[in-house]
Length: 88
Image (cartoon, rainbow, N blue to C red; front, side):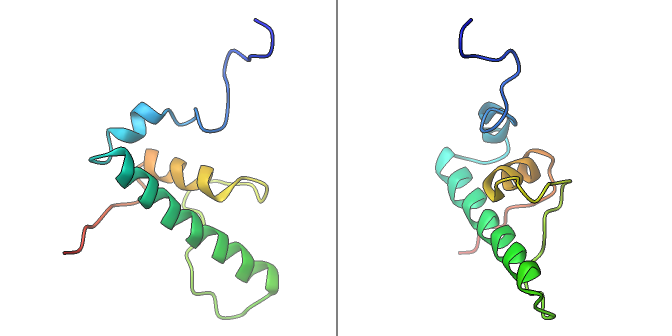
């Protein structure tokens, strides 16, 4: 097959179907992963600036600096490193 790889990376790893088993809807997955990605991005910015007052938690899974925060957040959800709490 031209233009495809046998084991694609990115949004397909972890598989969306596996991630959807961990939440009640795709909308919850979007909000949950986006919020965590913002935390990871803020953590990286704090580390880059040399700020001594780190207020965010960094990646909970092995991640390279060039890994996108959203990809890291989805891996954390897939590996059950996070738990979702719904506030009323």
